[in-house]
Image 1 (spheres, rainbow, N blue to C red):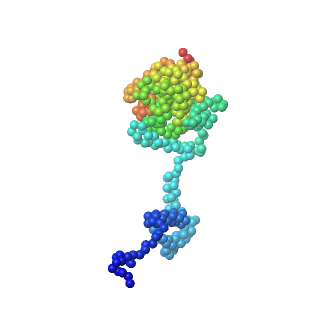
Image 2 (tube, helix red, strand yellow):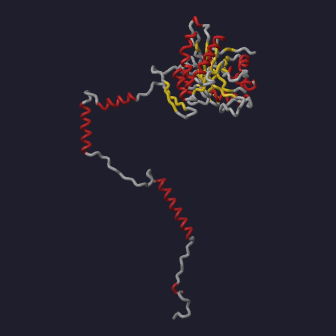
Image 3 (cartoon, rainbow, N blue to C red):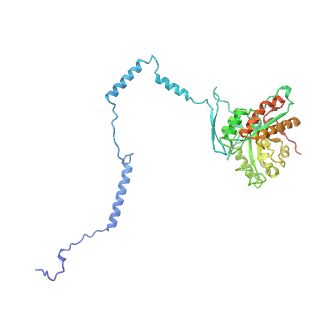
Length: 401
């Protein structure tokens, strides 16, 4: 008989615990891992695009009433097939005609005003009679790392000749004074650019800045409307960088290779222009080391060069003569003071210069007020015996001095 008095309390009730090979945390980790494997397997093997989200199935079988209505409608359509046309079809045709696509080749150009940020759109009409004749000559395009830039064609055709738009003068007016006017900054001001296209005659030359918007479309419209074009090339002024013409400006501190690379970037921004025009650049155009490689590249690509007349120290005329590069220089900047009275006075001085020298070149920026005064002047100038012509008709092969 057991000695209950001497035995430890509760010893006969103690049970032996199960000795498991793993601990409790290991069991929990294994369970979580198994759950993850199940989820991944379900996602990979079960085709459920809704990912297990609740869904409902709705019967789409049409009712007997709807079936009868459809049958009746079909019978009426067959009955009137050779009779009166369905009014809904006519309305649809009228709506389709109202939104008919513009003629082939049409383009919509969006110009962002650099000062106000306002946007303005206008459409470049296509040729309604069919596909229009290509306005760009692929033989005059060279591919570079920046894009397409002009070159002389394999047959010797130059871009300055191919894209020129000379004006036929009356036989008895061949010796009349000639004036060329260049409007610069196209693509910068929305209102000024729109006014230039709407109000100025084709004999006015347009100069595109490489920083404008939609340059290719603007260039395409200018060619279609028979305007000659120049590409403005920003160059270093004396007070650079306080006065900065913009990115890729040609600088006297750069090597000729660096400046030519920047020039080719600008050239790639659009196509179809007859030449280059300096923009600012009083310091650069006074430096033979800086300017000479640019003019050599221009003549090798069959372009002309136009000096914007911003600096009396420019040596562009002398260098152009030594390279046999067609050259023109701005005689009068028309909107130095952009008021109607001063613009009219500048135009009067331009006429006097043309009568004295036979030719004269004016330059102005694409601002609404300036465009309006030049447009009014252009309508009356020929009555005074002076002809407005594109820039290639006054560019000459200057003689070196």
